[in-house]
Length: 269
Image (cartoon, rainbow, N blue to C red):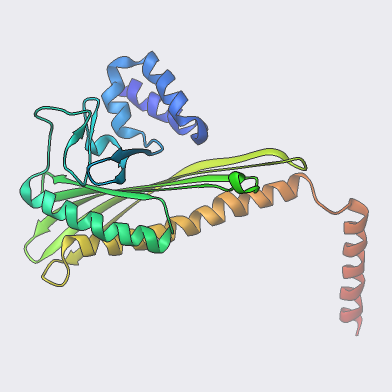
C-alpha cells in the first residue's frame, strides 16, 4: 500500500499543474482506497466560498473541511450546516480570529486584492495553523490578453518550549499564467513550488505566535517569489532563446566576427 501511495504521489508531481484537479479526480478513480492519503498530500488550487453572515469570502481547503462541509473562519460555522463538526479550542479560536485580521492587512499590502483565510487547531506539541492566500487576475475583461492565479498555502506547527517556540513551516505556491493573442496564439505557464523551514523564535508579550507567523511567512514568500521569477521565467526565456533566436544566424555571425576583430586588435596593440 505504501508503494502504491508513493507511486501515485510521484505521478501527480509529474502532471501539468494547470490540470491538477482533473488529474487528481482521475487518480482517485483508480485508487479510491487511498483517497484520504492522497488528498492530504497533494496541494490543490484554492477555491473560494462566501459567508453571508459576515459578507466575506473565505478559502476552502482540507484544514477547514469536515466531510463535505467547510468551516468559515469568521462565523466558525460549517456550510452546508453540520452537526458536531470539528471546531478549534477556545485558545486556537482566539488566535484564529486575530490571525485573520492580521493576514487580511498583509494580503492588502502585498497582493492588493485577493482573498486570505487562516485556520487554527491544536497540534500534537502546541498550536498549528494554515494560512491561505489566493489572488486571481483576469485582464482579458479589460482588453488585455492575460490571466493568472497565485495560490499560497502555508502550514505551520509550533512546539512550545517555555519562552521560545520551535516553528516548522511548509509553504507551497501554485502559479498559473495564460495569455492569448493573434501573434503568439495561446501560451500557458503553470507550476508549483514547495519549501520548508524551521526557526526558533521568542514567545512573549511583544512576540506572540501570530507575529512570528507573519515574520516567517513574509520571508518565505519573498524567497518563493524570487525563486519562481528565476526558474520559471528566467529559465523559460533561456530555453526559448536556445531553441530559436530573434536574430538571424548571419547577423549573429557578423557580430561574432566583429567582436573577434576588436579583440585581436586590442591584443596586438
